Image (tube, rainbow, N blue to C red):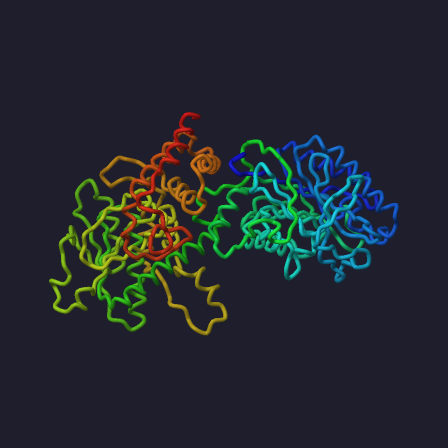
Length: 640
């Protein structure tokens, strides 16, 4: 896979002059060359950029239309030396009617011309005065001296050397319509959708456009490139300032605000978009473009490897925004508490036993908080009071600090403390006569998803029914939730208030006792490394790094080479390539070797979109061989 499936793309809004195609072609060439110098292989230019969008009734003049077509001819010729596919907007007169079009060009060749489907004649737009709606059916025309150029909206353009790189085009109003052409373009196979626009500026419109483009890229599992006209298209009463947005599957990779730089550039993971589409059974892409009723034009483009230009989060399981992180922590804690509450109600449980003797202390603390909240919820709904027991080890010197932390938090939550309790051979049935009473207790396993992925969760032989409150949550999320719970106020102040606005039913109040918050604030909560056990020095790397690998394997299905490249980008300045490779090598080794251990997990609440519960959609076979992964890891090792 060339460049690990990444394609560098750019959008640009040149400063145009009204009805001066030759000048505008020079501005377009400068923008294309600027993008090419920064490694871009795809460049999107605005709607009607060769004449400017506000040429208005000058579009009735043949001299303007011929000038635009001649300018296109010059632009295509003068950029033939560049390994760049670009789209440029211009009016074209075809068989006596004028169409608003994008010409798609590469290496001196016009690959196709795509007309605008929806023509706006409302508000500040009067396009119906000059333009015909474009035909869907594709036919051949002569454009800028080139014959047999496909014309019509049902076209896609695919790189024969990288089939994942497939482009589709629509123009401005098309994306605002109830059924944008980009929907069918994506279902015909397009992974990169491009919109050349001339949308005017107005209050809040830039925010709306960002949401529109971001949402469309998420819905279509695609990259969506949007560029609008620059300030040269402004009039005395309508202001245009350009806006650049490059979004990929719901994430904005790069953007330029209105009246800003007029340029955006980013690396798009087209291979990852194919992976996402493969994993969504409701996303039905046609077997071929022809099956979808589209004409596919092939071009051959080599994609060179270069340092990545794209944001790579080192915490893919947590949002980047502080407010969004707070909301996520609140929701995750609520999901845990309500998940355990459902188990309590179904089982008619009367007591909970939280294991604080094994694994991470932070995991144990979160499990205690969840158990206390679930017990409180059960009591508020009229259930019999639940006893919450915390199982701790004796306070020897090696674990004295951890022991004190756990005991302090347990006392602040009103939990019973069972020191050095041994439940391995305990049968609840022996202490009770009825079968119903035999299952009146629940053992709370605090293991997290990161431990499970590495096969580090210590199996227990408790006879009680078990529930693993953290088992579908990565380790790096745990300290963030503890920090959130340590702050003053209601634990669900962000997650609950907005979600229940306008509701007549008061939400269940999830609050952390002030004493417990005081304990949490006094404890240093930080990201820790993942060890085999508390008394073992084997270190599998920082939790955030291991979780990054978990995301790459489970959610993105990335091969080792690509995953390491992204890790180097994400953790630049913190960990070097050799450190990251060592931890990644250990991760793959442990993951495949311990897959059999994940076939008998206790129930636990599914927190995110990745999990390891076989009964909840995780279906890796237990006897899968890691040969392919080991082979690529060895190739990487030789190259370091």
